[in-house]
Image (cartoon, rainbow, N blue to C red; front, side, top):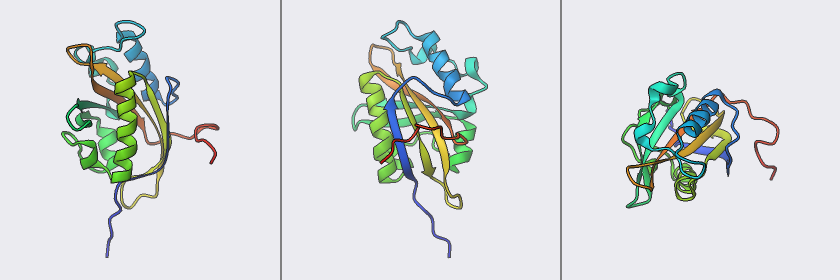
Length: 172
């Protein structure tokens, strides 16, 4: 008998930070800064072109903010992220994609990113897919403006082959 394991974030730490280490996150951060309209205003989705950073696109995602319900829907998800997670999530809301605990943690990080208009760095280890033990990851979440002056999207990079560094995880 095969039992499926729900998507779980086994251990995760997130913080407001623009210091990242994985190649895709560094490239995304640099591109995001280049596109920003000023130091205190993030770029707009309309100016964000995946082809400008095509090397990292397989590790990227874009989520649309759903104000009603305070949720986020996947607009774009890179092929490597889809492969790592073992399922296609385009069009899915966070709570439809992950276990309740994982969704709560992810939504909290996305909401802080969008509401406080700040980069969020997440590190930890995850247990997302059955038949896999767990893997370390680093993720970066960045706010994007819509047509007005409100954050309507979060773009992110994720590296599920990340090697945790000393100090990445707080001691308990």
